[in-house]
Image: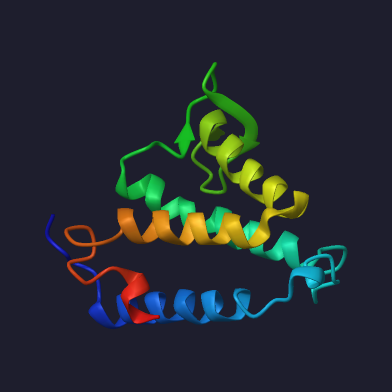
Length: 136
């Protein structure tokens, strides 16, 4: 795949996730239930949300459709593109499942697994750059 995106953007993307990874690994085991700056969200909620968000570019890189027409594969949640598409059920199950698993007490494991998966998928010929985790 030809890389047509800005290398500086790729670098900043990787650095941002590496910095987030460093913060996540500093959270004590007993602090995952602590409140976050986001109202009604704990530290585990935030990590689960970011872990789920890391999977969106993975879906795109793997050519998994995120938005689908109304039908048996569509969830009830519309995409935000004004394109009459809905998030696919499979995508929503993955995203919601990661957050729920994180809140259930596996936040660090969920993050590590999601971060590793993102690096596996978005390495080499997708970015034309070394894996993001190499910037840790």
